[in-house]
Amino acid sequence: MALLASLVLASSAWFAAPTQASVAAPPPGFVALFNGRDLSGWRGGTTYDHRQLLELPAAERAALIADWTRSLTELKDGKPHWRVESGELFNDGFGGYATTERDYGDFELRLEFKLAPGADSGVYLRGVPQVQIWDPTMPDPKGHGYAFGSGGLWNNTKGTPGRDPKVRADRPIGEWNALRVTMIGTRVSVWLNGQQVVEDVVLENYYDKVNKALTAEQRRPVPDRGPIQLQTHGGATTWRNIFVRELPSSR
Image 1 (tube, rainbow, N blue to C red):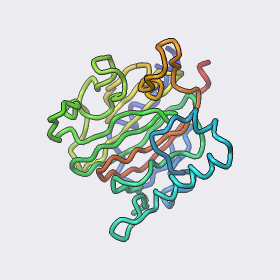
Image 2: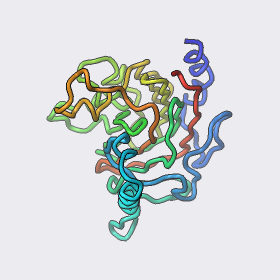
Image 3: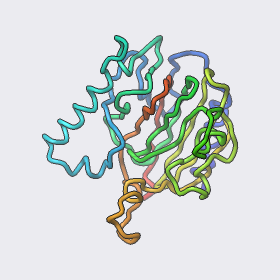
Image 4: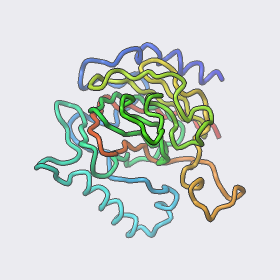
């Protein structure tokens, strides 16, 4: 509890409003995951169980990652899906997921994002979906919950705490949003634009959850370590000031 309290106090002011500069210095104790110039430190990825990736033979794993990474720079209308513009990381909604080359255990993540109308994106934690990011004004005939806003753990069981955000804290489409996530063990807390939208909720392991061959007893929590991923889902999203701080292991 003391660690959680210190995290709240240390971070609330920085996330009260997004910064204006495209490239800001990392806050004390953080390192930048995006350098404002290129995709150094990032590879491609997709919705893929990180445990299974690590179990592949080295050559097969390298080939799969190389294929995902090529998809980051595939061209659409003469421009790559992922590109740096004025110190910001732009994605047109297609291509692989921008995935950290490093794996992380317990951490605090801070970033800013800006959505185009109709965008649907997210942040995978240790390779597991996801902190949901989307346009809350989209029509919702299938009842996905767009109107609840961004920040919820959308792949958790529907109706459970944290699956939808506690409050809708999104800024208008086209404006910058400040996202802060802490992951300690399997528990996740999320703040959007200074408001806590998810409080200390277990992130369900999506991959075991959807594997019908597994019994309830065979399902396992999310992995101890894995990458951070920026999802592509068909709508343009711009990212900047992506910072991470590794935390002492809770295990």
